[in-house]
Amino acid sequence: MPAIILPPRCDRAAAEALLPDLVAASRGGRVEIDASKAEQVGQAMLQLLVSARVSASSCAISASPALAEAARMAGLSEALFGELPA
Image (cartoon, rainbow, N blue to C red; front, side, top):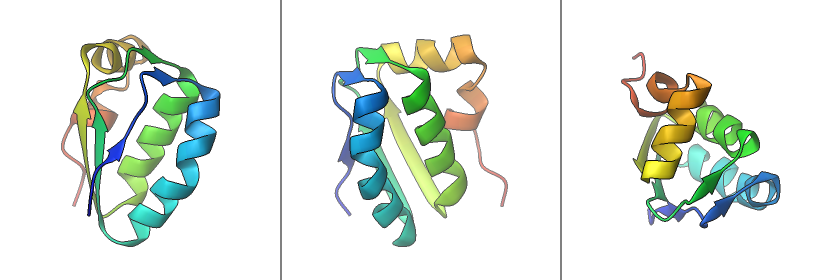
C-alpha cells in the first residue's frame, strides 16, 4: 500500500479530507503515513493520527520535526511513535 501523504498544513480541514483515506487504509491492515512535509500540525490532525494508530493493525508514521514537536507538546509522542500493544 502506498503511503498516505500529509500536507504541509495539517489543520482541521486537512484532517477531515484525510479521514476517508485513513479509514479505508486501516481496513487493509498496515497503514503508512508520510508526515515528513508537515510544517503546521493542529489538534484535529493529532487526534486523527492517534486514532489511526489505535485502529489499524499496524501503523507507521514518518514524522517531520513539526509533527514530532506538536506530539511532544501535546503529550502524544508515545501514542504516535511508540510501540503499540500487541
